[in-house]
Length: 115
Image 1 (cartoon, rainbow, N blue to C red):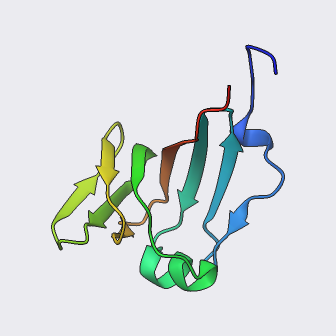
Image 2: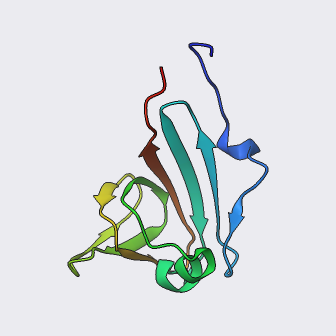
């Protein structure tokens, strides 16, 4: 493997499309997965993603590029995040878009180290 790996989120060919039209793409680097979601107004994890994927929400580390989203942790605490905010939330959370603008968010997930 080369010491340099380059991917481009704009060129991913298999985005995950949610039932409301929102979508998320993921690029896998050797040590990190980077996702970029464009979540439409009204999108909510527990209504549009969880039932479609059959998965529970997992830990997320994220950065909001535009729009706003409220995140509710498993302990029921909430935070609203917007452009420039970075966040980390544990598994079992819910999240939903606030307002009439799509929320664009990056998320980061470490991968097991391969040497």
